[in-house]
Length: 402
Ligand code: 3PG
Image (cartoon, rainbow, N blue to C red):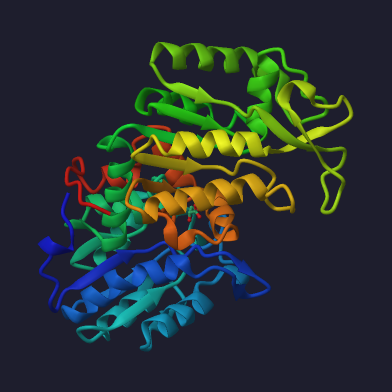
C-alpha cells in the first residue's frame, strides 16, 4: 500500500487515524509512548503544509459521550509533545468538526473528540465513515495498534478516501515483517503469560513459522503437567492437557524445538518477600506454586538465544510484577538486549505485559523493536489479517532493516 512518500499533502486536508488510547491513572498519562511515536507523522504532514485532522478512540465509552473519556487532555499532551498548539474540538463529526476544519490553515493540527462517543464507530457504520471522509481529502492510518478493529475510523473510512499508511504504521509493519514474514533464521519466539487457552492460535501460528519456541509463564505449568509432572498448586489449566500434548506433537512434526522450564522458583504464597524454593520441575512441593522459571532454565534459554538470529517475544517468563519473581524475565531480557546490541540478534517484542516487563527489566532501548500495540500485535502473531491494514490495500512488501 501507499505511504507518506506517495502523498502530496500540501494544502490538503488529511484525516489522520491515530491511536491516542494511552494509559491514564488519576487523570495522568502514565505512558506517553503512543503519543511520542505519532509525532513523526504529524510533523511530516504539517511541514508539508497539510491540514492535519487527528481522530482516535480513547478507552471504551460504548457509543456515548463519557466526560472522563474525552480526548481533550490527551490533545493537550499531544500539543506539548509537538511543541506547538493543537486545537481540540469536542465532537468528531457534525457542524462543530466541520467548522473547525474549515477554519484550518495549512500546517495546522486539530484533534477531534473520541470517535467511540458514537455507536457507529464500533459498528463500522457506513454513515459515520462517510461523515469522517467528508472532512478530508486524504486518509492516513497511523494506528497499527487499533488495526485489529474493523471500525468506521479504522476500516470504513479507508475505503472512501485515498488512503496511506503513516510512518508509525510503516515502522510497525516493517518490524513484523522482519520478525516473521521474512526473518533471518533461525528464528525463535518466547511465549509467556498465564494461559494457553488465550494463546492457542498464537502458538499454533508460531509453530508454523519459528524454529524454536521457548515457553514460560504459568502456561509452561500446563505443558509440564500434561507430561505427567506434578506441579503442586501452580496455576495451570487441567482441561488443556490434551491441547498441550497436541502442540508438542505438532512442533515435532514441524521441526520446531520446544523449550520448557527445567527448574522453577516456588512459593506457597504470591506476595513480595515470601520465602522461595528453587527446585527442578520434577520436585515441585505439593503445597507450592511455580511463580518463575529458575536459574538453570535461564541458563538454558540464554544459551539457546545465542543460536538465534531473530527473536519474537510475547509474555513474561514469571509473575514479574512481584519481586523476586521478575528475576528470570529480567535476566533473559538483559541477554536479549546484549545480543541485540552486539548485532547478533534482531529482537521484536510486543503485547501488553511484555512491554511493561521489558521496561521493568530496563532493556527497552536494547530491543530492536517494541511494538506500541497490544491486541493488534497478538492478532498479528496469530496470523490473522487485520482489517485496518486490509483496508489500506494489498500486502506490505517492503522489508526495510530495523
Ligand atoms: C489498544 O489499546 O490495544 C487499542 O487502542 C485498542 O483498544 P481496544 O482494545 O479498546 O479496542
